Image (tube, rainbow, N blue to C red; front, side, top):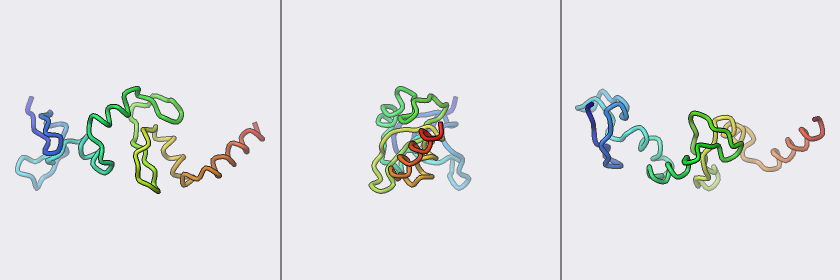
Length: 111
């Protein structure tokens, strides 16, 4: 198995862990996929592993195949990891707690 060293985390990983990049001499990105995914959030691999250690969405408790990193759009701080559905719902209501409360009241009143 061929490996490549990530220039961010400095770990040797299988070449499949790197995205293709035709302009690169070796045809691969310099950062591994995980570092590329974590870089906008300023997370290390260890911090990410701690967030996903239980494998559960921090809202619904579901255990999807893939969790997404959730950050507050106002402050930009990483809050946890969510399933795609919970992440989309928060985005659709603009993280507005009043809308979420109104939705709960609506559901409870029409159950």
